[in-house]
Amino acid sequence: MDAKRIADELVEKNAEANTKLKKLDETISMASTTLAELKLRSKFTLTLTAAQSDNRKAFDQLKAWADDPASRFQKEALAAWQAIMDEYADRLFIGGAKLPWKEGVDPNRLTLQELKGVFSSVSASWRPTVMEYIWNRTDIPKKDKMNFLVDVLSNKEESLTVTERAGRIFNAAAKLQYKGLATDRFLDWWSENGSKIEP
Image (tube, rainbow, N blue to C red; front, side, top):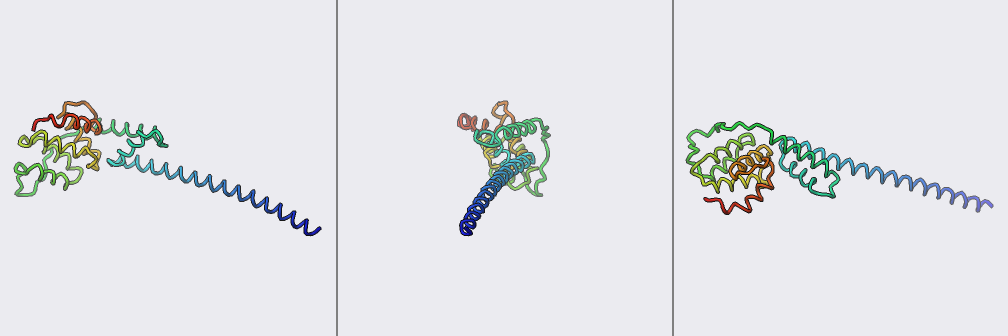
């Protein structure tokens, strides 16, 4: 009798243990799902914050999520991407700033390649001014200047402000009417029309 009672108690305790183990597995699974959701939400929030803080890669990541129907944050990414694009389009850009050239440097004698080096070496706050200077140089062929802008627009520039300024200059040069951060449209236009621009 004692053996049967002990066996029954063991069966009952095993069943209880299995039930508790199953509940524990469910709790762990729910916690894992919640943690994964928190990580995704955190990544989205950090990307959005970076994009709002002039980060081009983060802005492009929002666009990638917006274009991906499988993205968990497709709608939010699209709304954020459009809002940032509109915000930059509404910004006023005052040109005409003078670069503090090193003493003895005559910028009018610098080649386009040398000016690209200057562009790459200065801070993001000065790059629009260098870009404007390059664009206004009449001795540099328009096609070369537009090709330089295409380089800036082709994901090589980390600052949205600089990218947007390049887009504005490109817009005017190509007689287009897109927002300055519509980089895909500019690049598509260039691939179709760049070869037709006279040197």
